Amino acid sequence: MKREGFVFGFFTGGGTRALLEEAGFGTSSGLHAGSMISNKTSAMVEMSMIMIMAPQGDTVVGSRIIALNVRHWIGDRVWIGGGLGEIEGEVNALSVMISAGYELTQTRTFALDLA
Image 1 (cartoon, rainbow, N blue to C red):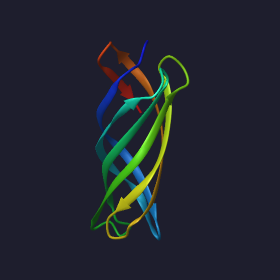
Image 2 (cartoon, rainbow, N blue to C red):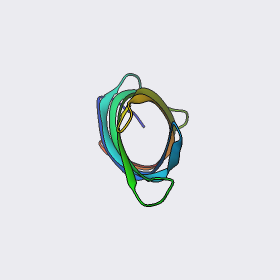
Image 3 (tube, rainbow, N blue to C red):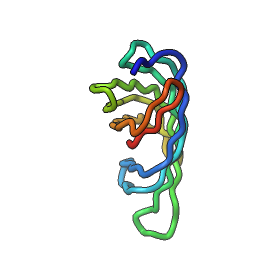
């Protein structure tokens, strides 16, 4: 499948955060926009929000992440990605993102991924 031009997408699912003494799993959602820089590689800006139950279990901690992300297809449907950015919340810090996914379906202008 030929990939070219503008890339836009949204996602929702699970995520994790390890920041100082607080860590945990929660729900995340966000969007990304960018461009294909080759047939197998895209560069994007990604903005996401993650909501995590605090370790004591009675509060929810939210953080925003803004990152530059690169995604590379290692097969016809399998991709890996990674990026660097900033996490904003009760503490601002460097964000490192790692991702992988599989394209369930793809047409000329649309793809549905499982990541």
